[in-house]
Amino acid sequence: MKKLFSLLFIMLVLLINPLTISAAQSEPETSAPSVLLMDADTGTILYAKDETTERPLASVTKVMTLLLIFEAIDSEQISLNDSVTVSEHAAGMGGSQVYLEANETQTVETMIKCIVIASANDASVAMAEFICGSEEAFVEQMNAKASALGMEHTHFVNACGLDADGHYSCALDIALMSRELTVNHPEIFDYTSIWMEDITHHTAKGDSVFTLSSTNKLLRQYEYATGLKTGSTSQAKFCLAATATRNDVNLIASIMAADDSASRISDAISLFEWGFSNCRVYTDENTDILADIPVTGGTDNSLSLQYSGSFRYLDTTGSAEELDKAFSLPESLEAPITEGDSIGKAIYTLGETKVGEIDIIAAESIPERTLKDAVRQMFQLLFFGTTASQQISDGPSF
Image 1 (cartoon, rainbow, N blue to C red):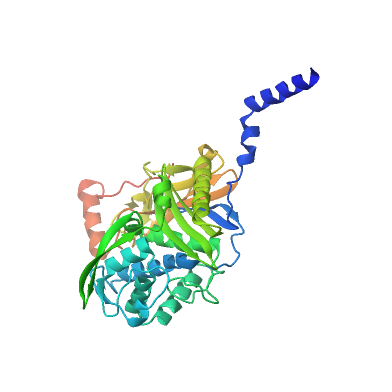
Image 2: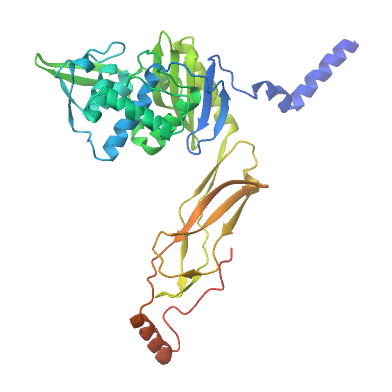
C-alpha cells in the first residue's frame, strides 16, 4: 500500500510540475557527431555539439561557392544573363553533376540553379573558372573569404566539395558562411525553394531537356524549411546546411558526418523544433519621437533626430519584457552636419548586461553658417523679432 501511495504521489508531482517533465528536453536530440544551431539575424549560437572539429564537408562547400557568385553579381563583375562556356575540366567533374558538355553554354542563372538544386559539381567549377579564370584562383578567393569571416577551422581545395586532402570545415564555420550568404543575399531563397525544374542543354549535338531535382529532402519533410545545401561523400558521410523560418525567427542548422540522409534530416528538424520552442523575437520598431539637439554655427539652431532602424533581440530566457532602453547623445552639436550622420545611440540592456544598440542619426543636413546667413538671420531678428529657427530645445529628453 505504501509503495502504491508513493507511486501515485510521484505521478501527481510530475503532473503539476511541467519543468520536471521537460527537463529531458533541455537539449535537442541529435545523432550526428557535429551539429550547431544559430539564429541567422543576430548570429547567436543557440546550441552546439563538437562544433569546431574539422571534417570533410562534401557539397556543403558550395555554400561558399554560391556566396562568391552572388558577391560577383552584386559588384557587377558578372550578371545573371551572362553566358558561361563550359571547359573540359569543368565537364569532367565526377560526383553529382548535370552532365554539362565541353563548350556548352549556359547562363549564370541556370548555373546557379544547377548548383543549388542538383548540387552540380560541373556547374560549380564552370562558374569558378568564369569568375576567376581558373578553379585554383577561385579557391584562393574562397579561402580568403573564409579567413575574413573568421572561419578558423576551414580550408578549401576545390570549388565543389569532392573529397581531397586538406579540404575541410566544421559545424561552426558552415553556419558562419551560411549566415553570410542568406542574410546578405536573401535572393538565394528564390533558388533553394525550387523542388524540380527543367533546363535545356545547348550543345553541338543540339538541344535536350534535363530535369533538375532537389537534393534537399528537408524541403518536403519540414514545412518551415527554406534551404540550404546538402552534401555527402564516402569520407564526409552526410552533411547539411539547413535554414528554416517560423514566427519571424530565422534559424541555421549545420550537421556533419551523419550516418545517412534520414539522420541528417531528423537532426535538422530536431534542432529547428528545439530552437523555435525556446526562442522569441523582441522587436522595438523605434516609433517614439526624439527631441531635437541644439546646433551652433549652422544655418539652423537645432537638429532633428531619428533612429537608423528597428531593434531586434532574440530572447531565449523569456525575459525580454525586462529590457531597458537608454540614450547616449551629446548635449549640443556644431555645424556642419550631414543627413545620416551618426549622432548617438539607443542602448538596450537586460539587467546589467548590454544586449544591443541602434544608431541615432541626423534626420537632415545643416550646413555651416556663412556671413550671408548671419546677415539674413540678423534682419529676421530685427524686423520679425525672431529667426526662422530660433526655438532651441533644452536638450534631449526621453
